[in-house]
Amino acid sequence: MYLRHERAGEIRRLATDVQTADSVLAQMRGLMFRRSIPDDFALVFRFDSVGNRDVHMLFVFEPLDVIWIVDEEVVRIERLEPWTGIAAHEADTLVELTAGGADDVSVGDTVRLAD
Image (cartoon, rainbow, N blue to C red; front, side, top):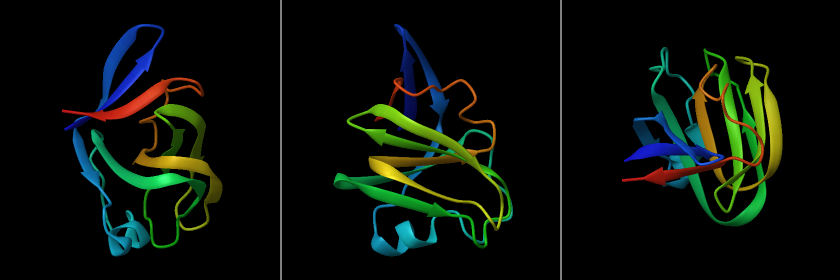
C-alpha cells in the first residue's frame, strides 16, 4: 500500500511507508511520542463520513504536514509545529506526513491509498 498523488495527469508516490490509524486509540494517539518519522512515511486516518477533523501536536516532536481530504480531493494542507500546532477542517480522510512531505501537493489535487 502506498499514498498516490495525482495532479493534471501526473501521478507520483507521496509515501510508500504507510500506516492507517484504524482504531479509536490509534486515531487518538496519531504520531504522539514518536522520536523520529521516516521521510517516506504517512499516517492515514480514514473516516466513514465527512466531518470536522482536528489535529493537535501535543507530544509530537517533529513538525508535520497535514492534508485534509474529501472524496480523494485535497481540501486543506497545513504545516503544524511540534507541541503547539493545532488545526481543524472538514474531511473524510486525514494524512500526516513529515514536514516537507506535502510540499508538492495543492488544494484540488487527488490523494488516495493505492495497492
